[in-house]
Each structure stands twice: as structure tokens, then as C-alpha cells.
Length: 173
Image 1 (cartoon, one colour):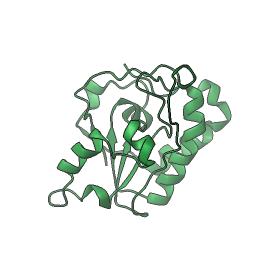
Image 2 (cartoon, helix red, strand yellow):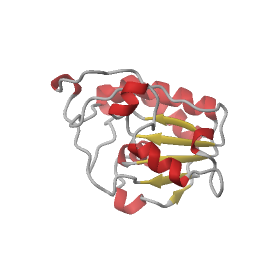
Image 3 (cartoon, rainbow, N blue to C red):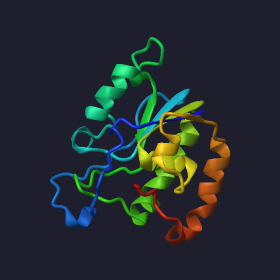
Image 4 (cartoon, helix red, strand yellow):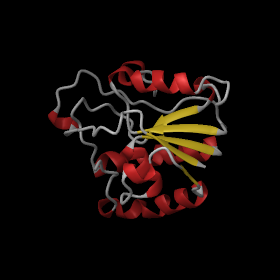
């Protein structure tokens, strides 16, 4: 089951090129949490707080997720595997590129294979489009459960590695 959530109130996040933004950090932020895990939370990419701490979901979105995933009706947030599509914070106005996806996607796939989640919470448009395809709009899919064969999805994405120039990155729209 894939559950799509938007903790950014449906607002568009504008990102404009890592190389064009003077950022003080650009740390690699890998996924973290128990492996294997029945639940996995996948976001777009790290923010400033995640970059500094080198851990996903330690900023405002993570605080919001912890409020909802409190261990009572949902698993405790710290008891689920947490990761992002993209691994580097590019600054407030960064727009992720196809090259960013080609660099970071293999690590995401390896994490999903190791994690073997039964439920994936996709946070935001980039994550939703990675799982459901670039043609979906968040208005169509936000907050709704979707059944996705994760093994088939991973196999399809692995098959597309040879043509990364032809594979567009999830875009915001």
C-alpha cells in the first residue's frame, strides 16, 4: 500500500540548481531506521536541518510526521524506515535535475529492497511521482491509498538505468 501525503499544504516547492546556489553544506543524507521495516516514509530531499544532521525528516516535516505517527494508531515515526528520493540539500530554491535522480535513485532502490516495506508513505509530489509516474497531479492522488507492486516498480526502474537521459526526473506541477 502506498499512501501519499502532502505536509506542505499543496504549495509548490521551487528548487533552482545546486551549482547556482551558494550553500554552506551539501552533505549526503542516507535513509535511516530499522531494516527490514513494515513501513517506509519517502520524501523529496533533505532540507537544511537534515543536511546539518545527515538524517532525513529531522526538520519541520519530520516534526509534523512525528505528531501523526505517534505509536498509537500508526507506528511510531522513529520505528519506521525514513528516506528521500534525492540525497543532497541544494538550497531553498533548488530544482532537482535528471542527473540528481540518476545519482540518487540506485541508493533509494537498494534501501527499498533491503527495507521490504508493506506500506510506503510518499511525502510530496516528487515522491508521489517517483512511485506513480510523472503524469499524476497531486490533486488527483494526495492523501489517497494506492496499491503498488514495489518489486515490479523496482525492476522497471532498474531496467531504465541504461537510458537515464530519456528518463525525466519527477517534476513539480
